[in-house]
Image (tube, rainbow, N blue to C red; front, side):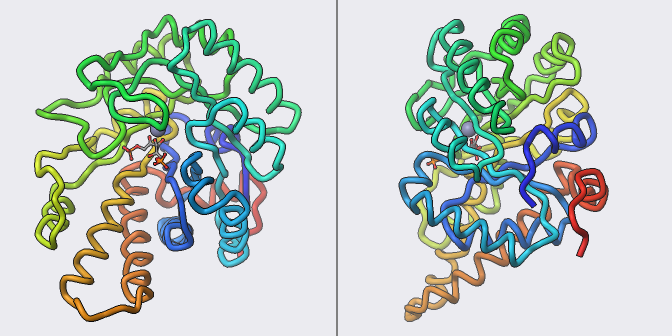
Amino acid sequence: MIVTTTELFKLAYGKFAVGAYNINNMEQALGLFQGHLDAQAPFIIQISKGARKYAGVKMLEAIIRACDGEFPEAVYAVHLDHGDEQTCNECIDSGFYSSVMIDASHETFEENAAITRRVVEYARAKGVSVESEIGMLGGVEEHVSVDEKHAMLTDPDEAKAFVEQSGCDSLAVAIGTSHGAYKFSGNQSLHFDRIAEIQKRLPGFPLVMHGSSSVPKDEVEKINRYGGQLDPSARGVDESEFAKAIPLGVTKVNIDTDGRLVWMRVHREHFYNDPKNFDFRKPGAEYIKAYADFIVNKSKALLSAGTLPEVQAALGAAVQ
Ligand code: G3H
Ligand code: 13P
Ligand code: ZN
């Protein structure tokens, strides 16, 4: 059942974080649904502009609708990740997306708030939730590249003013994470003091953490053992930090890179061990299973595992 992120966040705030995962193809979608039913957790499917271009808007929608039929117990939101205003409006018009992210964080504060306000007004009429972003995450987004060293943490007073001016339903904040596999060079962690300051100004308001992949060391090692050439110093967010961020208002946690690493590890390992195979369904099936297992573990770290029955009861989903 597709629900809005706002509905999910009301149930999750302070207790668990809803995992938001990007999909581009059928295998990712199957692993995502299977994993969340195994974990008994609600979730958010994220679709980037790149994914819409790669698979096609209609194909992604068809894949998700087919999964919905196969996994009728699932409770999830369909969300546009890092959208511009035009793509947000297209997704709102489609009637399929229950949530959009307008990312105008590269604009000035005033311009970002004004663009977000327009999207919010358009989305409200159709019951779609809106996430926006202020502050600059390090790493690479679709349209902007910011050196990690110069990445700015979100200013708590600005966050409050931004929410008031824009009317957005959730806010992506820069609290030490960045996109991609190379987030940290040393022993950095999330900036909990900053998250706490933002929560003080915005009590009860859902905060979103982008760039939350953990980039597990053993995954990187395996990828390199089977022919990959990732920088072995690649590091991500320590999973144990999610539980500390959740009481501070972090309610949505975005993960894409880790899923790509699972894909790379499974396929490299498969073809290394079975170089003569040309049936792509064999590694495909291994990947779906590995991705589902990965989702189960991630749901435990996000404290969302086991919450599905209460979410179904609260949102009126049919229990199979
Ligand atoms: O933050 C961006 C996500 O990882 C999506 O990546 O734009 O390559 O689909 P993508
Ligand atoms: P990662 O690159 O850490 O997986 O972050 C993904 C993300 O923020 C998508 O919006
Ligand atoms: Zn992001």
